[in-house]
Length: 96
Image (cartoon, rainbow, N blue to C red; front, side, top):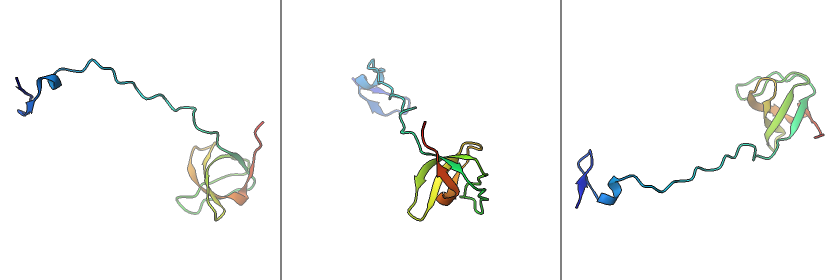
């Protein structure tokens, strides 16, 4: 026997009832990411473009990625903003 769903298409009977099989939820990956490198700004870097990260001396920046041309993408601990900055404006903070 075939039944019609609300859109009047033919649906086999075993499709009309909800499945009792539970689908597992994916496990959270929170906290599973590798720790990012931590840097301290050694001189003020005034952003001159919308993709650059404005940094003040002593700001802490977490490195997201590094490019071959000497620029990095990072996240400011102070503002939470993400942007590009030259690696020459920061120094790496050793993990303790």
